[in-house]
Image 1: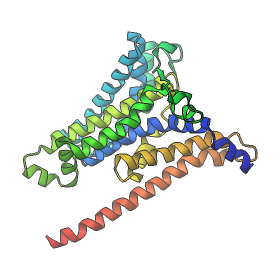
Image 2: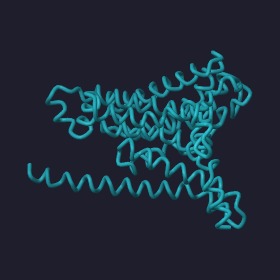
Image 3: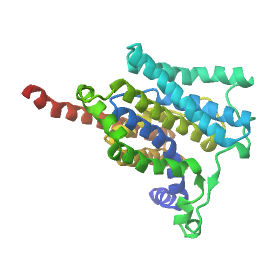
Image 4: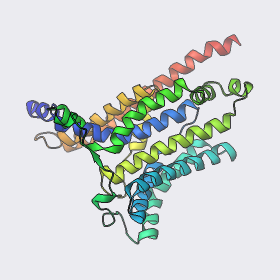
Length: 316
């Protein structure tokens, strides 16, 4: 059984699936990183992904152009994130409660919205055609390389974009004035205010970027991964993304690596489920066990941060 499992893992098809599964988690996790750097917890990633996934399909269907669907999903993600920001920053609502409200809307409200706009219930299978899905890219030269081409070529356009965004977000955070302001607001909002930085403006920008990334993750799910929207399709990836960002210590590269770990857990669940003699209950628990470990890591990192700040506070 062990040899069968190892053979099913160490092959090009498994690594291809691993990258495919990781991409939507990484989109949301990068959104969590941006928000966290500005001192904002965007716990509504799950709901944003779910709602954006639905509207990505709808916009693509209404315009008969996949790119409009992707951009529409991103704009919906920005809007929902700004709604969270409005209630948190303007109405002084607990941001966790605002995020939970969006998650609840994503879980139940999307079914109502689908029925209202299309008369359908449960999924958009009848609306999706191959032309409305995000195109697959076969990379010249690389696709001809044995094994490497099978792993790296043939993914969707958004798959390549998300790994490029890891580098772009690092550059924005550490090499631009906007990134400096985001980090300053997250680390010490009072100090940022004292040098003329608008804390609320920066937090709005950060949560909007977070929503845009979650929206792209939603578009990936419905317009490539599942090839259509269905209820429950996000399946906790927004929460897994929060754990991935925590395990990556809020850094783009670390978050990418932890997202790959969560993607590996989900890919293993798929592979192991086909191995005889392995309990299906144990297999289904793999991603959630890894998520729990990620949350434990998050709790430890928060505890360590608090310990580092205590001496400074005592010194004051």
